[in-house]
Amino acid sequence: MSRLDYNSYLDKAAKIKLAVFDVDGVLTNGQLILGESGNEYKCFDVRDGHGLVMLLETGCQVAVITARTSKIVAERMASLGIEYVYQGEKDKGARLLALIDELGLTTEQVLYVGDDVIDLPAMSRVGLAVSVNDGHQKVREFAHWVTENNGGQGAVREVCETIMQSQEKLDALLNRYLASD
Image 1 (cartoon, rainbow, N blue to C red):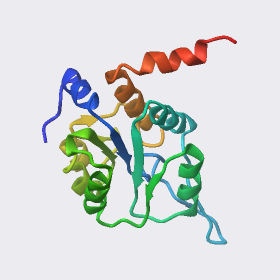
Image 2 (image 1 turned 90 degrees about the vertical axis):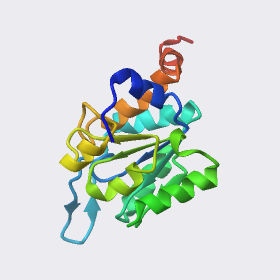
Image 3 (image 1 turned 180 degrees about the vertical axis):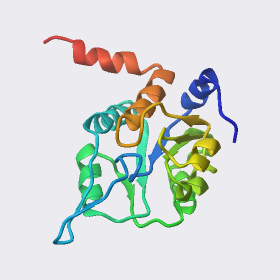
Image 4 (image 1 turned 45 degrees about the vertical axis):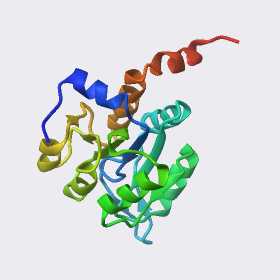
């Protein structure tokens, strides 16, 4: 794939009806903290989470596809209202195509954000492939767009706001926060 200029990126983002995100390294900083009792801990960025909530409010669908399985991910996604959560998916490309078919979308209407080579099969099947700034070199080279922010540190919010901006929904949504009672 070739890197897009910003206007081309916005043109593609304007068509997005489904935004799909990897978890580890995208919605988190990629670190896994394991406790002595076997508990697993992940760190999610609260602003990324609110970006996902705002994106859902605009009518864009959101999904996550991750190769790992974690109760923490299920709980976090449920708290954000994300309906499409696929864990333990080693073939992310096949899972993504099944979801696109289920939702009756075209690949041009789908964005995928990844950070590592396991995301490449999914990224190769969408209209807009995005890498987080600290993604693997091959993923950054493959992506149409690379975020300014790192995974788990604002990259997801950046993607969400760009989609909303390109669809001319961001200003109205932000103005709701400024409205006084």
